[in-house]
Image (cartoon, rainbow, N blue to C red; front, side, top):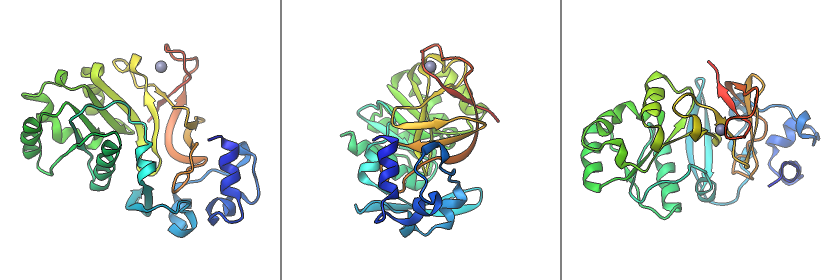
Length: 261
Ligand SMILES: [Zn+2]
């Protein structure tokens, strides 16, 4: 979907009011005001729900402010987490993301094992199930340390997909140690996948490249547009994540950005 057709759809008189209200008739992408988390929090779900399909709801909290969020089956299935094995373990720190990851796996035609609250139980089940890959949020990684450290050496995994932002020292060193079979995505619960870390550089640093379906503006904070009519569309959303553009194209040839603290 092009940015122009997305703006057109969201500006239509019959469309819900969220973007129409904020844009005040403006249709030039570079002049559209930035959305913030507060903008979403302030609007009732009915004003920002652009899909008539059945949807899953979850409550997302950012900076102490909560909003009810909606995702449809197709919006979850379209997420680009990359390649996953045939027997994945899904392990997000919160339940609704775990359901999302599981739903995404079903969409890829694979049946995942879902992590239990107790990491020892998870490790035992993972061994019995014979998992070959893991999809997890970075917050869930420390509790799974035993799984990666003990009898299931990371070399047995085909893909470990981490999503999140503000990767701390623990996660960063895990990524470095497992760079060969780890994929890292920058993803927020409200936006879904924003960008992927460059595979060529995982050992040294995290450099992110946006897929074609996402437009990232990277002046000081990361402003994201998803080029799809999501149940709750994301257009010029200021994520508040501090970033810096690469001064020159990455070694892989693409433009990219890094996270700054
Ligand atoms: Zn690159």
